[in-house]
Length: 159
Image (cartoon, rainbow, N blue to C red; front, side, top):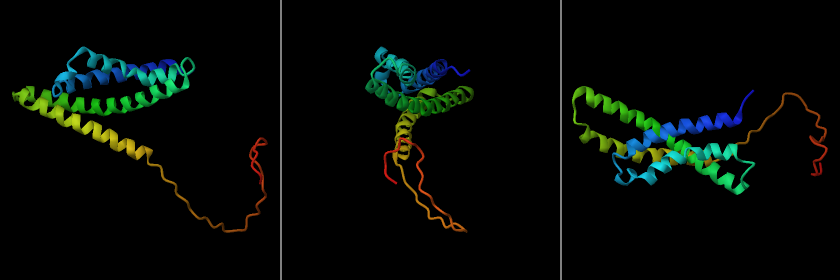
């Protein structure tokens, strides 16, 4: 049997891991992120998505919508940031293996990823919200006899 509560809390924990990795990466280029309030934001915000789905019956609907909206955007931000943190970590390993000075590369790479992640999040968000309707004309090969029917007996629209 599928346990919905455990599933969403597991998503929250996985998002927490990615969010902490992203926090460590972003601290290299943004000095004020190396504070306790910023760290707590990066630790608490991943659970907004889980909270919106698990506590939907215990909170007012407007609060559940706020958590769902904020948690969805934070989840996408965390996914893109975690991909950037993987690149950041691989670059750190490469610099350590070659003997290159990481302090010359790390902050600039972190700043580049910090610029790329919100831009890609905004681009994917605008693609997602830009709905389009498409119509097509069909011509059947034989005559179809049409009889007006209702799909539901409670339908109040006249036929």
